[in-house]
Image (cartoon, rainbow over all chains, first blue to last red; front, top):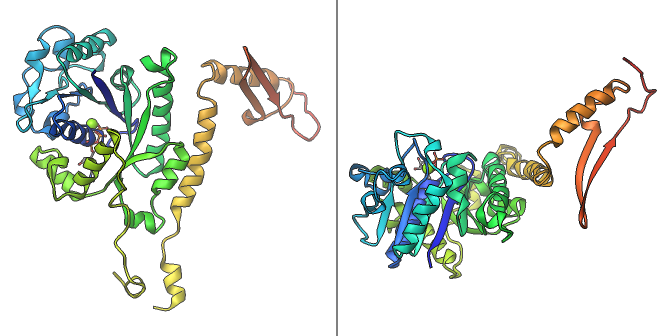
Length: 270
Length: 89
Ligand SMILES: Nc1ncnc2c1ncn2[C@@H]1O[C@H](COP(=O)(O)OP(=O)(O)OP(=O)(O)O)[C@@H](O)[C@H]1O
Ligand SMILES: [Mg+2]
């Protein structure tokens, strides 16, 4: 059985591509056969985060328009032989994606014995985003603790429930998990940033993982190595935990508390 | 630094404001989520008609689609201004 997971958010720049790269890599590290697809046609980025940008010959749109075979377009990861990247096209626009084409590619990946297909959605609610979620079995909604991101994720939750195959066929929509990223415990504690409970209460869904805001994410993207592979990174470790929970394990949340400061320090400067 | 200054210097808790605002807007958007696309247009056109006779604001008109078992019911309510109705037109 192949499981298709869409990583989506509505709002841009919240960490979808970072999450897709780490999710795909984390699943592959557990021996699963994984394909990760960039649906952000015209603004390809997943290849950079995965570190395979110089090996893109054919892309997702080429396969959809049958200008290349799926085998030709899948880029094998350097670090995991059971992980493949399907890059977005840089030159076409979003309309180059068709529902039939996307369905055909997903079905072919299923026949090839893939365990997981991770779909990295573009921002917004237009064609690329709606096709990325349409065939999903599950959704990971990436949300930042910030008003516009929270509101946009609620919009996305609505679309997952109705404008998807599972929504249209009366199966109650695509089951969704919230992933809270770019979380800053210090700012939450000082009342400047929404906390985990706040986001859960507003959206009415539990958070499956909390990824702290951390410089290691930028460093990982600089090098083209998904942050989950950086064992010293708090964000990387938080991704490991989140994936374990996604697979059914229960793990306590880590890195969600601000480092303790004494009263003295709080009163007389940091 | 005195205790008063310390309390004053603490940043305002803006997160609670954010949460309250989100709670309201999300509830409002959810309630209008599965309603027909023509509702906003219908509302504007109704407003134009009503305004020929009474002066009301846009938010005085409340349109909702309610599920009642098998049926969908279009509920319309207009809050008229309290003072004497002014008949323009
Ligand atoms: N946990 C984090 N800590 C610090 N920086 C982060 C974190 N997650 C993401 N970022 C940074 O935020 C920026 C946006 O991340 P990313 O590209 O993954 O978002 P996106 O949702 O895919 O954006 P888009 O909507 O444009 O596709 C990047 O610069 C990334 O390095
Ligand atoms: Mg992206």
